[in-house]
Every structure is written in C-alpha cells, then in structure tokens.
Length: 384
Image (cartoon, rainbow, N blue to C red; front, side, top):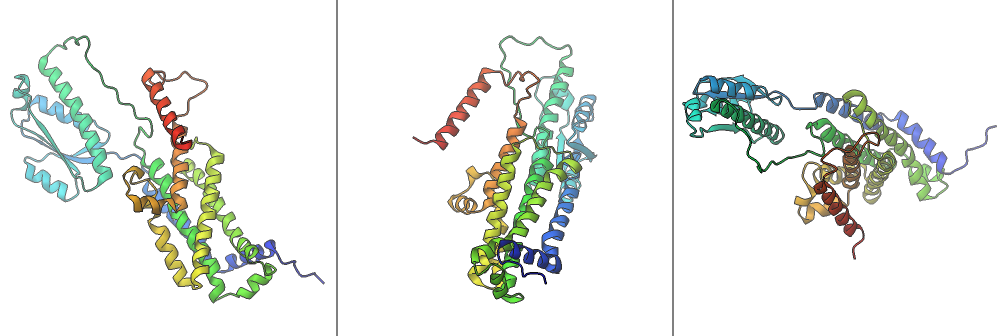
C-alpha cells in the first residue's frame, strides 16, 4: 500500500499543477492569452521601421528646380508621394481622408525667386493627430526639405563656392535607436505589459477559486495547516510558468524580428523574477482581502491595467505629477521597465573591445558629459 504523501510545499504545488492542467479557464488565461497577445503584437510590428508615409505635393511652379525639389522629397525613406494635386484644397482632403499624413506646397515663381536670391518659401503641413507617425513625417520632411533647399540653392548659384574659414558646424548624434526601430522599443515594453496583467489575474484566479469552487480546508491540509506554505506552494507553478514565458521573450524578439539583446542578462532575469513575484503577491492579496473571486479580479485589473501609462515608457517620468509618480512607484512594472530599457540602452552604448572607439566617443566634450552624468548619478545614489 502506497503511503500517503507528506503535507508540505511540494504536495500543495502538485495539487495546484494538476488543477491548472484540468481547469479550462486557467489554461486559457495562463497560456492562450499570452500566446494570442504575442502573436498579434509581433504581427503588428513585423515592419518595425516606419516607411513610405503618404505625402501629397502641390507644385504651383512646375519648373525644373521645383521638380528636382520634389524628387528630393520622394527620395526620403520615410516618405512616399501618393498624389500631386493642383491646389491645397485637394491636399487637405487627402489628409482628412487618411490617404496622406502630410502635404508640401511649392509656391509659384519658386525657381525665379530662388535664382534672384529672394528666399522663396516652401510650406509643409502634417497631421499631428497621430503622434508617432507625425513625428516621423516631420523629421522626414525636415531632412528632405533641408537637402532639397541646399541642392536647389547650389544649382541656382551654379559653381559651388568655397566654404568660409571659421564657420560653425553642428553635429547631432543619436545614441539610442538611431534607426527609429519601434519594435525594439515598443514591442519590448508591450510584451511584459501584457504579461504583468496576466500574472496578477492568474494569481487572483488561483487563490480566489479556493473560496468558491474548491476547498479551502483541503488546501490548508495539504500544507499541514501552514498558510505561508499553502500560499507559496499554490503560486510556485505559476511562477515557474511565467518565468519560462519571460525567458522566451528575447528568443521571440531575436528569432522573428532580429532584435538582439546585449544588456546584462543576470540583472534582467532577476528583475523579471521580482516582477513575477510582485504581481503574484498582488493578485493573491486582493483575493485574500475580499474573499470573492469576481470582486478580487476586478480590483486587481483596476490596479494593474493603467500601469503601462505610469511606467515611464510612453510618457517621460520627468513630466509626471506627484500622483502619477506615486502610483507608478508602487507597481513592479515601473522598476522592471527601468532595468529592462536601461540595460538595453547600456547594451547599445557598450564599446567593442576589438575595435577602436568612435571619434565622437574620444572627444573631450563626450568625456566631460559622461563624467558629469556619472557624478550626478553618484550623488543620487550616495547623497551627502
């Protein structure tokens, strides 16, 4: 006769694992929801860099110089000319209909005024309603218009003139995400955002089910009457499942989208473990406080749902008010994002040991800026 299993942590964990495999709602919440969300988000960001935003061009001059100007705008990788109407009213209709996000107007007598040195004006309009696309369109228009103006001015002057000695040249260097790859920024943040809601709800569902459909007495009996062991054993299978899912996220990003991670892996793994523990504890706490499955899940969703808005990803932390800072500080997602994106930026800025440092990293200005940032961070960590 097989002896009865000894009450304790492992008996509670085995009981919970068998329940997770046989409960349909638990399987859907823990496995189906993350897989569906990851598939949808990966499909959305299958083209991670925004290209060919629609632009309409109104060329009222129709000269050789204006055509060269339009060709320069069309050469921008971020922009694509979808229409060339004859007036601004047609361009406005194209923007309102969503066919284009921006319009460029070249005034009449553009070539004549340019050759006469009268500084003709080129006007660009863009729809600010869609912030991300509008930012990309604005940047692409600025770059292409600046290049087009320079080329048109050079052609109007004829032979290139010698540069004056002592002219000031400004150089802008993008340190992080120079290609504007939104998959490595948004997708890396959205996947944990979906998962943190699932973790909290799964913990609440597992604990809350004991109050309605399962037996609280049998749960405690498996733990030998110890509530701490009972709670730890119940949440242990969920912790293992979600930790495995968190560890597969980099494989999804690198295997499907080619987004590699070069940060400090042990630190990110520890942060992921703390994130899972924090939201498992939050979901269980809500159920233990209200002792009702539906009410506890509602309170849990109310707390964790707005976490992404306060995580400092879409809206900068420096611009938040006191309530947003306090709300974000009590949620584990905020600190996990700080570690994840902070180590990601550190991976981008890491120096290759086999190659020389870039010229801008050897400059005195960059050295002084790095030392100033290090001193400021040291004062924050070790205040006097």
